Length: 504
Ligand SMILES: Cc1cc2nc3c(=O)[nH]c(=O)nc-3n(C[C@H](O)[C@H](O)[C@H](O)COP(=O)(O)OP(=O)(O)OC[C@H]3O[C@@H](n4cnc5c(N)ncnc54)[C@H](O)[C@@H]3O)c2cc1C
Image 1 (spheres, rainbow, N blue to C red):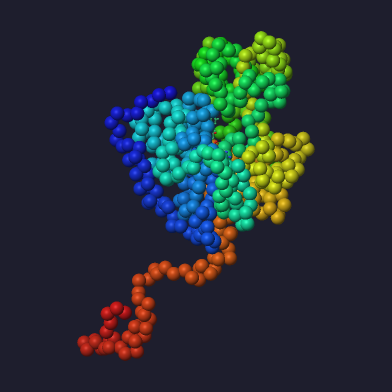
Image 2 (cartoon, rainbow, N blue to C red; image 1 turned 180 degrees about the horizontal axis):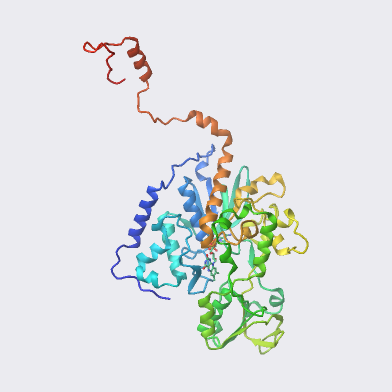
C-alpha cells in the first residue's frame, strides 16, 4: 500500500524527533547514571545489559533502561541493518493486525507515538482514513524511534551462546566469521516469536519431500519460482493467507489453502486479555489459571486478519478448503500427492503455516542454559485431563521474565531474561506484541534493575556513607563563624538587640 507523504509538511520527522526529545527531557530522560563500574580493570567493557535482538522489543527495552540511567547497554542482532524483526522479511501482509489506536512503546509520550509519526509524514487526514497501520510504515516508525533514543544496534552479530563467567554472563557472538566473547551483568533475550524453538515442519512432510518442494511461511520463500505452479498451503492463520496472496500475485497457477477445522475462527480471543489488569499482573495469577489460559489459546486460534481474508477470497484461483486435514504426503513423478479426508490433492509446491515447535535445546544462544532452567513440566502438576506436553516444555519464568535455575547452584541463569515467545505460559500471550509493550516492558525493566541493585547490596551502605552532594549552599566553616558570632554579640546602638553579621 502506497500512501503519499504530504507535500508541505508542518513539521519534518526530524522536527518531531526534537519535540519528542524535548518531551523526554521534561520527563527526566535520561536519569542520571547510578550504577558504578565494577571494580575490575576491564570494567568499561562489561555491559550492564546485553539485549539479544533489535526488534521492537529490543529497542523499547533499551530505551526504557537508558531512561532509568543505565549507560552500558548493547543491542545485538544477527540480521542486516534495517531488517530487524519480521516486518520486511517474512511478514507479508499489507497492514498490521493491531488496531491503529492501540498504544504500545511510546511511554505515554504523545510525540513518540506512531500516530504522531504517521500524521507528521502523511498528514492528519491520512491517519483518519487509515484502517490499520501499513506494515512497512510500522518498521519505518520503529527505525525512527530507535534513532530518537540513539540506540545503536550491532547488526550481523549472531549470538551463539550465553554462559556464566564468574559473577557475569559471557555472551559469545559471531560477526563476519569472527567469534568473540563479551561480558555482561545481565542479558535480555528479545529474540522474537521463534525464540523458544524453531518453525515447525510436520515430520510426515519433511520426511516425504526434498527440501526444495516446501517452505515454512515464516521463512524466505522464492515466490517468483512459484509462477505457473499449483501451490498447497497448510494452515489458516495470518501467514497462510498472506503467503497464498503473494504466491498468486507472483503468478502461481492455483493456491489451495487447507486446514483441519470445519470453520474458520470468527472471534479473536487475544483481544479479550488485553486489559490493563491482565496485562499488568498476569504473572500474579495462579499457576492453574495461567496453565488453563495457555491451553485455551492453544486450541482457540485467531481468525485471519480481515484484509488478508478478503484479499485472498477475491483472487481468482484461490480455493479455501476447510475440514481438509493432510493425512499423508508423497512425491510422485507428476506432482506432490496430498491425501486428505476429501481425496487426493495434487500440488507442485507446499507452503506450511504450521507454527513453531517449543524446544529450547535447538536455539544456539541457549546451548548452555537450556537444560539448567526450570520448565513448567517440572514445576507444575496439571489437574487431571489438562496435561499438555508442549506447554510443559516452556520455561517457568519469575515475575520479571528471569529464568529460574533447576539447581540452586546455577543461580547465574536468573541474570538472563526471556522476553520472547518462551514467556507465553508464565506471562501470557502478549508481552512482545504492540499491545503488550506498555505493560510488559516495565515488568522486565524492573527485573533487570532489581538484579543490578541486588548485586550491589554489599556496597550500598559504604557508598551511602561516602555520599557527598551539597544541598545547602553554606561554607564549610559556617558553624565556626556562627559560634564566634554567638560568643561576642554586637548590640545595635539603636535597638540594643544583637546585630546580624554579614555572612552568618
Ligand atoms: C505475519 C505477521 C503479522 C504480525 N502482525 C502483528 C501485529 O499486527 N501486531 C503485533 O503486535 N505483532 C504482530 N506480529 C508479531 C510480531 O512478530 C511481534 O509483535 C514482534 O515482531 C515482536 O517483536 P520482538 O522484538 O519481540 O521480536 P522480533 O521482532 O521477532 O525481533 C527479534 C530479533 O531478534 C533477532 N535474533 C533472534 N535470535 C538472535 C540471535 N541468536 N542472535 C542475534 N539476533 C537474534 C532477530 O534477528 C530479530 O531481529 C506479526 C508477526 C507476523 C509474522
